[in-house]
Image (cartoon, rainbow, N blue to C red; front, side):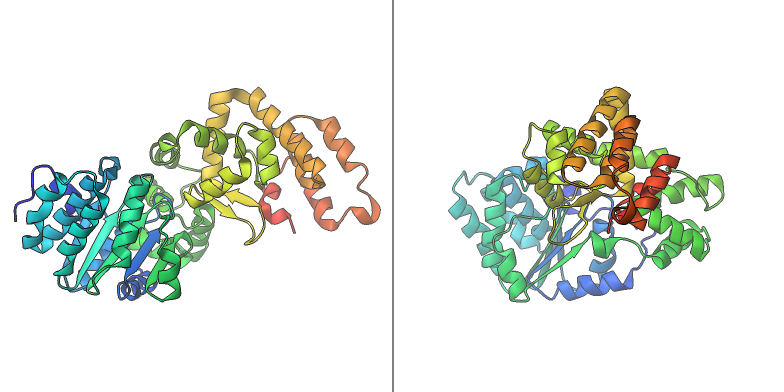
Length: 409
């Protein structure tokens, strides 16, 4: 079937990757296991290799694979439905004839749902991939439509959702309990030390020893996009030991993450980036115009490189490369005086919370040495633990690596 002119062929064709794909056997096994169930979700931040993983895994599926790359223009339910059917029609031709009717169906969601389920009902065993689902998820009608489809999906159909944000699907908990859904997140997708070395060798013909591979993996926290950009820089320089943070990583974060945020979220993550530990009460002091607890939960759900420091508690941290980038952007946009004021506000809040080491850290960063000394002085004898003693020593010496979240018990 010829693709209708109003559905660009690029949207229903799996993308091509410009570098050789690394076969990550542990992830391929997860994907193939997930494809035996009704729903497979790959959810992680930009640059974690969700699309690359699917492109590596799907050739072994055997049956038809319908691919739809979504963007903001698909947030209209009829356009979404038409794109879905066009993608299926590209691999099961007779189905695509329904696209014009769906496009002109109008706003009746019940009728659209019936049309889509009717089109899917006669399909052979088929995998349907919705790539970049986060671009349409802000329209609740789209989410409800996918919920309805999942609730009544014909048994031969498997749905794969690749997204940067956790989809608000009401049916997901039930599918997980029933063993009919699999989720893969950034903790699975990040590279191990061995995968880093294999990636540099297989994709860029660069050899590296275990020490260098381990250092790069720790520095990037296994983030594939950063490793790819470092590998490109290393290849250009003719050696694998790239020092510092390549500017390309910051450019990538600016274009694919920060510049896509709404102004409120953008301002929040920039100001909160001065913190090595993000507490709701401290973030509230830095950005009083928002509900910090709600904002942190939304930033976490949106996979904006924000991770919990403990499963049940309120403490978070940013991915270290993202934090570096945000702090640099904050300094460039607001200047050193504004940054110092934020550090001072954070120090006051941490002091009020009874967390002296973090209070001192931010008083130092604000240049308020007298306040830092005032907080340190009462901490003597049995109140000054070895951990705090080392933290204060390194603070006084200006050794910022001690300020990481690992300094807290």
